[in-house]
Image (cartoon, rainbow, N blue to C red; front, side, top):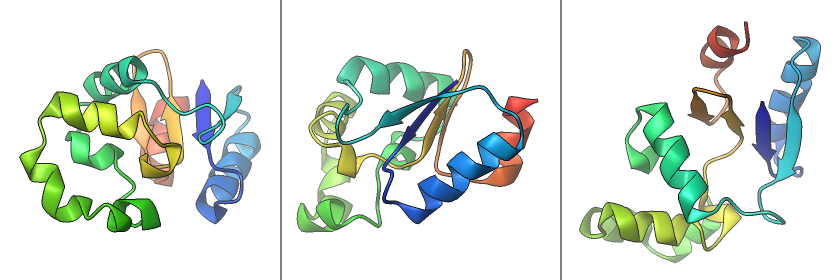
Amino acid sequence: MLFIEYPKCSTCQRAGKWLEEHGAVFERRHIVEKNPTKEELKQWHQMSGLPLKRFFNTSGMKYKELKLKDRLPQLSEEEQYELLATDGMLVKRPLLIGEDFAIPGFKEKEWEEKIK
């Protein structure tokens, strides 16, 4: 599995610890140093079955700075992928990616179902 995190984020730290405690085998990836590409985001979005908005870090400063709450509905899906690919701080984290799933954010119950 791929665990995409921002190491200074307390939720990411908690999620990483949770994965270790559950014996999960995973690779860590720093979301800012190696921002997800547009192609990766498309693939993960499709695998997740979730609305694309769930991949945005809606509580982040960058999201608020760019006034995306108002702008997002006017952007096409393609434009949203491009925007997400420009800055890791716009992407919801942590992200857990498996062979057939992608989960943005950390909810123990959701993660537990996937790592069994």
